[in-house]
Length: 518
Image 1 (cartoon, rainbow, N blue to C red):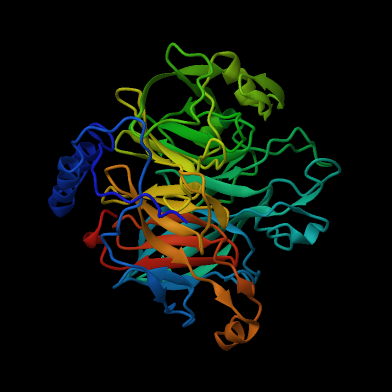
Image 2: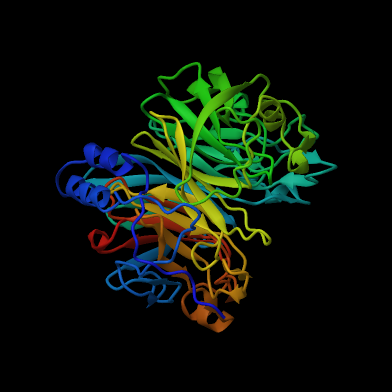
């Protein structure tokens, strides 16, 4: 068995990217970002891929949960965490916590009396079921629901995805409640800057339910649904497709969108008619566009080299609600959404399977999680400079130990990029050797294009162990190779929130962040 690629050489992350981060923050954070920029000025080596680095935070080891006492995850020295919202736990509204936790965002920071509160919205990537009782909030009229009908083909049954809202108060979990239901596979999404969450359905479907509803849309969920219920109308202008995530550029009001449709997707953006924002403002429509490489029609972006750059432009999609179909593309016949079919016809680029997206300081980071053999691919992270419209491959993994199918990602207030793994328990190295990995991880992107481990899934418990911890209904057995998702930092950078999807658990991690790049 060959060893994973390991190096301490430094490569440029993105020209001017860290400098922009430095300008956005003052004091010690600005100084740190400046040091990162200075450490990333050497030229990139063409034809190379990313490598695994030692973590500046130190080695990982099992750490007991401060809530249950169970060693749910592995962390570096000095870090601790509190779990909450396990699948089946009763919420403040008396309903059980839904399963399959996924994307999540901090949507509001507020002062309540003498307390400081953060409001998070969490997706539940549930698909369909045979009973209407499985719809999130089915028994509560107060929980907004998009579709309570049944489909007879394709996504057969009742749609059981949706969202829950969580409250973090003064460093502790306080409560949670159901906030939206009747949707299909709410994968990731994105936070607005006006106190709401855009929750994304991950499905390419032309199926119509018994209530006349189609699926594959984005919906808006407010921070406090007791004051304003979630809007049950989809944001049609943002497209009907296998949405993964979306992210707002606060400088322009534009939204950047990813689609997880294998070999038939590009990066998208939505230019809203009402760019000033506000609750329900995106329903006023806008223009949807797809990314194209300049002077190259349908550029295949699946095999870049580390730090390879492309000049890009945008093509307009006339009908964001067009049905999907089979597309004969330069990479073969692919199942494609209506938006991509139109973008492709105008020369849009081809990515493997785009997932997480985050906008910070004029840069759009997004992941391509596709893992293949011959050629070996284990995931990419791209960075688009919105000023220059130059796209750069800032992370290229051809070895699952360097990065194993990067899914959700986030950027800390200190400027550090963190991604969630959603890969297989075995796969290929860059040399073609098959290896096994013990667990899925939270991985940090080093400014030189390498990666390092920040956390690892350690969930493997018997029914007796779970019962002793007060979690008798929780999932038993080895869940270490189930995905991480929903990573997001608190606005002050002190807390990292994330989800373990397999058992369905949310964790809040704290510790000495200043010891590393996060």
